[in-house]
Image: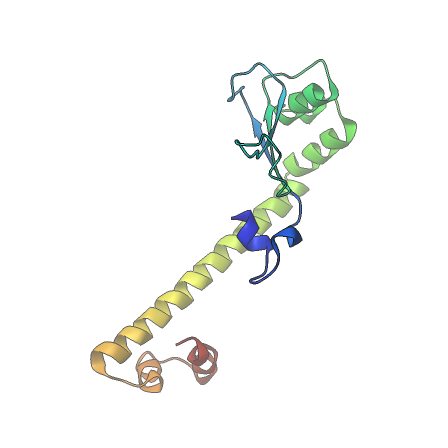
Length: 162
């Protein structure tokens, strides 16, 4: 999926940007007792790195002390910013947990996303209704939109999408 999103049609394989996918897990899902696992694609027959620029990293979040990464995992799983070890991360977490700070911003952003999704769904439903009327009743798009009592502005907006 990342490759198809990052490479234009007809572009050379070498044009792919280097990509890191990092999974931070609560427990040691790979069960090797390691704090961090680096996964690279390897050609089995030769043992050579495939060299496609893709990297996967698993971080075992159950190790929460003894290193900078362990301290970071401690902070990631803290419920209270006051218990965090990294001051900057604690400050950011405190901001986003504050109802007048980031909590408000996040809430507002979610409300906007939900409203946007509803509007898109409503528009798609309207387009489906227009298409169904055109097919079933053998109407033109204009007649179908008039039957639905859509304003001329709305008709002009929807016409290219039908």
